[in-house]
Length: 167
Image (tube, rainbow, N blue to C red):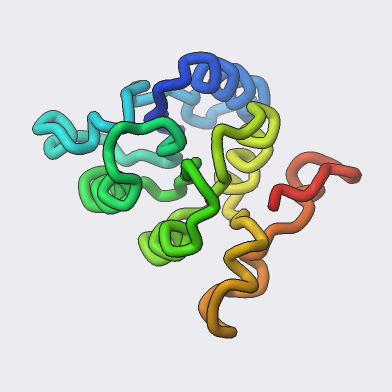
């Protein structure tokens, strides 16, 4: 599994990588090997235009403390990297940004900065093919703009019974 972590928060990246390695399946499955840990603004540079040469299975984009416009970063991630699954941390509960992330293919949004455990749980859910978006997105627009399963709820299927809601 190839992972791309785009965040300024080094502790978040280190914790997430430890968690991902701990839950990685044993056996002849490809090992977890991050393509890189970069700052989010890396997406806007020339190096990102050529990257990656390998398919990215999962990406985390932390816009919560990014210096660039989150909407521009979301579009750049989708256009330049096109990860199979990705999670985004947004700086504020901005419904327009959440809708943009959903439209571009994000598997989830969390308003950041968020507790590391919440980011890890959301990452587990998104990597497993689920979606997690704040409840604010469900009630903010016209019906039918988001599939019912994409609304925030518990993630007990990934983290076990009793996991708190993400939204």
